[in-house]
Length: 319
Image 1 (tube, rainbow, N blue to C red):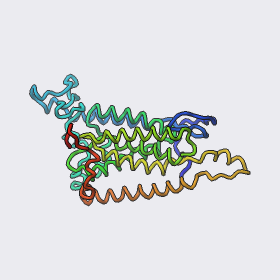
Image 2: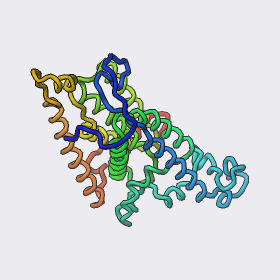
Image 3: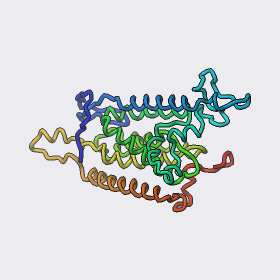
Image 4: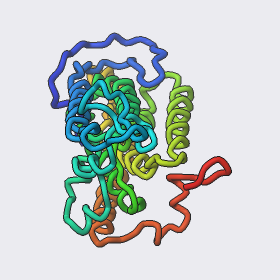
């Protein structure tokens, strides 16, 4: 079990004290990493969105007073008409051409790379800003605590897991966005709290706060035009990865290491159990998902009610 960071960043030894930070208790000595990967991902997503808008070139393709592009002063970077895209972004055909997730192309045209490229595309400026602000809020803190390698792995693999689940259940539409990867970071935060329970202060407050944030975000996924399967797939993948990659030594292990009269295991038995179970579930889940996907399986045939997880019909809207 890996128990030391291999990344290199700014280090500082933290003094032993009580901390009311609800996501992390600095009650043990640890490494503080200088975050650079999360800002780089934000910049990459902005650059990709600009490139997509350049390719979209709305004024060249939309003519007529009733189909005017939004913010025409931006030239070829102007947005599609709001009736077509209310998120201030490109057309669906442009997103598809640039690598959006589409089941038919993944399965029948062997475009497996779309499972990865779709997480770097966004449907509009509102979609992009919402995801990037969330990434900064969640990702910076995680990268400071665990370094860029582990956070980067969680981000990418969670986005991949979200794409797999989305492809299995949403086969009649395209999907884009970093939401699956973001939910993976949320899932990793939850598993990190659970597997390192003994080193936390204010455990109940931390757990309730995190569960509330997760529930609100998953609840918003029940609205129309939101790919909640990517959210769920990313969250479950990140949850498993957190149990595997974010394990910390037990509280008091550092002190016991310098006291020969006290023996304390570096990790507790429940940490080992969660590590093994999560690793097995992660490998089996991703493998089964990929096999089902490339065999052309439709997840809705195996789960008749699962479609309601992505859009719950009400009197105000239909799915």
